[in-house]
Length: 247
Image (cartoon, rainbow, N blue to C red; front, top):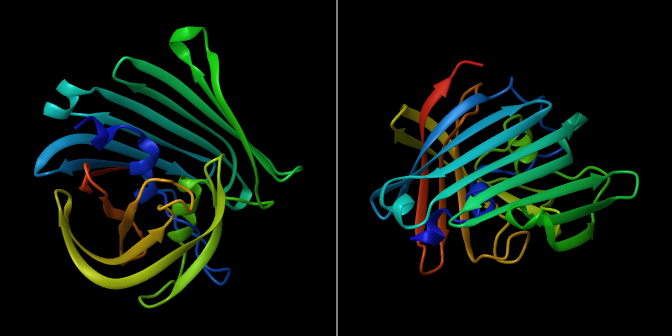
């Protein structure tokens, strides 16, 4: 079960959708704070809290119940945006089992480069790994992409490409608007549009699988459900909206 919640970027991949076409209108107001219930194999595997604003974002991921007893996960991801949700800098603080790692990505728009550095906090911040990658002048991390998609006019049957990077890889990621669905979560029943985000299988994230997100089909465009269909041994992980808090 340790693989279910290990590595917030994989879960984030479902939440962090990529931007909409150039014809999209301005994104709605800040999302504020959204809380999610994480289900894996019919058990409560963890909780996620997403806080997104025009200048930056934060995601908190915690394991729960049996999963937490076997492998405790306490991950926090933060990002700072420049105008148009272009990524400027991000940090992942990961406390997983007995490990504590911090990973920082700096996006240099003057050089069109992203630099990725991972530190071992428990070993005097020793540098474990470094990487660099060429990126477009404006590239989106997963959170900035989600904010931009919320302002899109992408209808079922339509697709778009957008530049996206995690600091180690950069790619034009395809997003498919698939169909309208009614989705029931602990927060209520919502009319939604389902999107598939094709950033796994070596595109940006190496892990094999598929990532889906359901955005409410209204002016608020809230991500009400996220689902990862991953290869063995993980399988399907679902995040459902549990609570929406006032900004």
